[in-house]
Length: 183
Ligand SMILES: [Zn+2]
Image 1 (cartoon, rainbow, N blue to C red):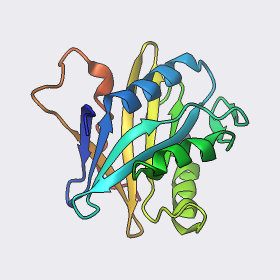
Image 2: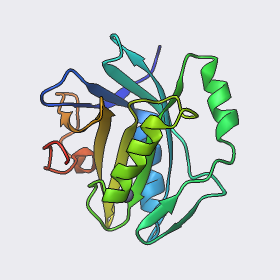
Image 3: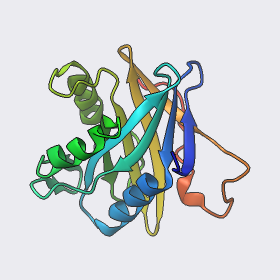
């Protein structure tokens, strides 16, 4: 498939990798910066490769219109998501998780964020036993991204793999320094 992988995140002690395409990363960054003072978010769509060890996120959706949010909370709506997912199913892609922003904040998952991941993983309607959560922490014009996956009940905070291709001037893709497994 002719998709450009922009950034790859990997777990330190597990063979888990999450790859983000340029389009997915751009949507997360732009929508996060545009939503000043209020969290925003959507879902992550893509597929697994390499026996399920590599998640390739090909799309992040914009905020569904029936979402609600505040300074430090985001309740994602559902409007339009079924149609988007249907269109992707034809290409073997499906729901992989959630993304949301932390305006003027660090991209660290809150206890609510972690609870949400756990409930998604056991909610049969999502069919997503290992949800991925991407958080975009903004400050002024820059965005820091964190990627967390719930794998066999364990929360793994992934860290970026810096490829030689990555532009060193693009600081916004450099996530937080906390790459220890979350509690
Ligand atoms: Zn959050």
